[in-house]
Image (cartoon, rainbow, N blue to C red; front, side, top):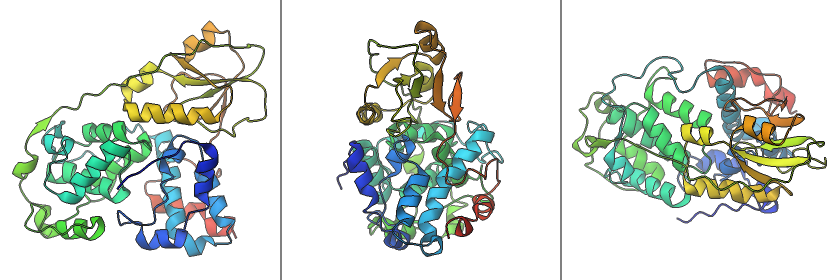
Length: 365
């Protein structure tokens, strides 16, 4: 399976017309199902969940007809709302238990677990920067609940490689699987994995009932562990040409929206902070994807350094940026992101409490 994520804005918008929300609901759990492959563009802030939803609803669907699709968009907003309130580097509800180590299985890193559906998904992740959502759950379950490894290091590993890497969605999902953000752990046995990954394995260490999986010893295939040490190779700064009499619009890894203040004259700067990428490292593939997407924004310039040093060096005092939980030390005018619902914010302990509060069937009649 080959995946190519285009970076031209017109091509990205054209992808919205190919969404089939009915087929999505029926097949999204299958690795070759009718998924949209829009998540990298949503995560990088090129398009928004609201933009996607309104485009689909413009095709005369009703929310009730395509509820499965709408819920998946709302999950992304929900995780972001959690991140606005909670420190996601710590357990959201309760600590994961049991934990045998804070490292990661060597067989995960090497895509050699022996579970074909998972190993193929990891290889595809390395090749393309993409992993199907169900395979992410399978991988997390294998790591946290079968190998009994703490979620933090493997979550960092997966985020490092994902073109759609979103710290909130990634970490909340890992914590959900391991029981740190949910009432029970998520398990997948071999029968389930075979069904959704088009494999036909038997007699593996996952070829058991769910009751057996919950009490089994750590299999030999997962015993070897090692650290995951990652760093980001950052590009060089441009030689900035800045008019400090004009407003300055700050873009970053989570905001590459070509339509943001599109018709206003101003300085446009892609801020790449070494401190951010030291805390949340990403692969060369992810950096290249970000830099390619920034070409949709005319006159944008790249600055590698801190927000404070940028403002001080160029005497900037009329600065605009979009809100994001990982923005640290930003100053100026903070603008809200394009939420599906601007009226529902704060922490909800479950997605379904959040979903019910949205009441989108009433909003989008």
